[in-house]
Image (tube, rainbow, N blue to C red):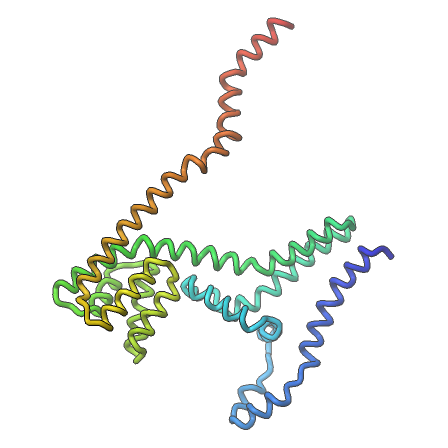
Length: 291
């Protein structure tokens, strides 16, 4: 047989062998002993009773812990949508990779070649990382929406603070009078504080979840003002002014990028159509004249 056929067989046999070895050959006796000593044997001994549970169990065993933690941070940045919890994402990634592998394998079997073998591997990898791409895109759009809404939220908080309301009360009022991802993050931060979490930790978690520079700068200013006894109203006023200046600068930057972005569509789409409309009749007249 040719090396391509041997390579395709190895691409199927090796992943299946690795999955079988990870499920059967792992020594779990020490973990079971520790769990039994802690009185958690009933919870640990529960076996998956359905196909999704079994798939989730296999996916968790094959997925590195660091990658799972990174994926959980991405889901937190996307707002933790209810339809896409971490368990569902971990369970669906192997299914997408298997579907991409089947598609690429069918193309490879139809006409074996090195290019199609590489295409099969590329389709499998891209299909496995499709949820990551979607989560990254959702998180980016969410951050942009929060960047736009932050100056207005700070103005509302400033008005409430100057009226005599505390900082947390101003945050609560601004969150309930607004809508969007930033208001949801403010509500979650207030809930963390209400259940007994330290204010500094709750604010730092807010900056970590939102993860854009303006909010991180605002959180640092609030933490320092709370630590050194600076007036919150002055901090909010300066931060709101700075946020509006940055938002105007971003708008100017996007406006300056527009001519560069429309250059290639103009060259390859608009100008040829204009040349056909303007020069077409003239060219046909010249052809008839010399025919």
